[in-house]
Length: 220
Image (cartoon, rainbow, N blue to C red; front, side, top):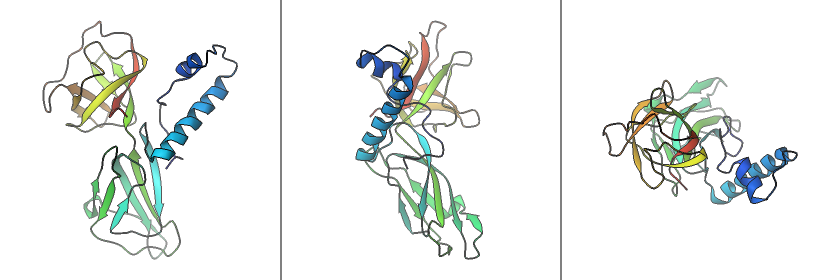
């Protein structure tokens, strides 16, 4: 799972933060610092079996089972389940044939299969493509007052927190509050936030701060 097909768009530690901590301002070794950051984040994620920033992964199994436990938390959503049938042809399992238990930061998600098809006898016959991770990199679109999570999205009603990555978050928001997703637009990967579940979206002023990018999700 730590070799994603769609890797995290951002890392929880920036190059600037790492260099500032090391008191190293030259750009000569930026490539080395970036490699060290990625390696350190991977090591911690592996030790905890948790993904800090959302990425898309493909998990392989030898056969379709009644219950598939996703080995990394938290599971966000399952995009597809494909398998090779007895003829060696790739089939997609209908979404009506399984249900997803997302789990939490501290509990692995599961996929429950209602109808188990026969599969090819070779190893790796089943692929579960899913999104895992605690938080999504996010940018603020001040033109339409929405938050862009491209290439992902969050569902209405999800409870989230924020923390800045580069710059600040909009002045109308706070890092010490929890918000609810409203106005989710999966086609454009955009959301709005409310102080209450199903409530009115928060409006932003023209002076919303030096907003560049931040994380939205569950803060580890």
